[in-house]
Length: 110
Image 1 (cartoon, one colour):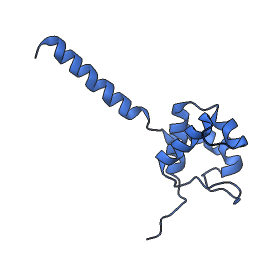
Image 2 (cartoon, helix red, strand yellow; image 1 turned 60 degrees about the vertical axis):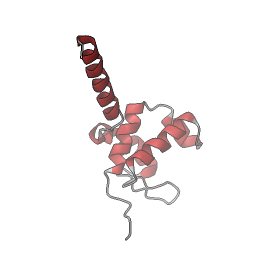
Image 3 (cartoon, rainbow, N blue to C red; image 1 turned 90 degrees about the vertical axis):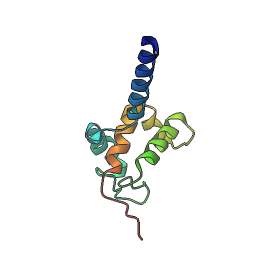
């Protein structure tokens, strides 16, 4: 391999590795927003105190990310959630999804 091919291969490898990790959320980064803003409807740990709002605790992280992205893009509509999601960055969405997915809540019965 020549020098340019090796450099190109290394650059591509680094870019793919970085993009693969870019979507992972940081639960700690979302804790403040989750326990204040989101808590008003969903409870501080995602266990909503009322059946009118979904329980987020224990939901699949990818599902939570997708739903927030759908609210933000208006693929899914709800006056409250669309307004909240419009303000979120991709990283904030990933962080919130990580936070709520790590909370104790929904259990799968076997």
